[in-house]
Length: 169
Image 1 (spheres, rainbow, N blue to C red):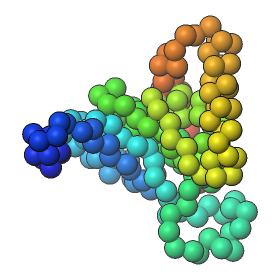
Image 2 (tube, rainbow, N blue to C red):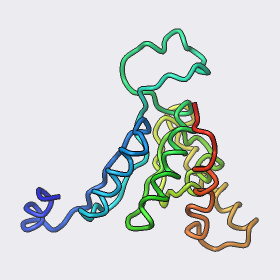
Image 3 (spheres, rainbow, N blue to C red):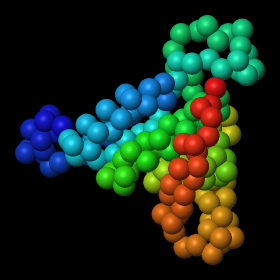
């Protein structure tokens, strides 16, 4: 944040987003969100790749490979971390949902867990650019079906319920 302030004097302030991993403990998340709130961070990206290797992986034999796991296997864990972060952030900054978004339904789950924006990556690799239009269409359909006009009306709607569930494995 100090570097942004120094650079901002010359080129204008730039937003700073903090990307967190889904492997954090809740105590670590408490600390990180607390610091982010005190320091005036502009937003958080929840959550990056995981080092965990769930047994349900299709290619579990290859699970010993190094590096972070992303995409669909990360969805439940990253969505839980989103809900936990939403509860702690208390609306002080936007949250960007990432991790396993490959449909309008998964995008909606991230929003209902607390995301104000979503980021897709692995889903684009597997489903192509048409995924973006598909997600948009599904989100519009959801708004129409629920007589809502803005997605902001459902941001975090499921966060409390998600944080009460068993921790995803």
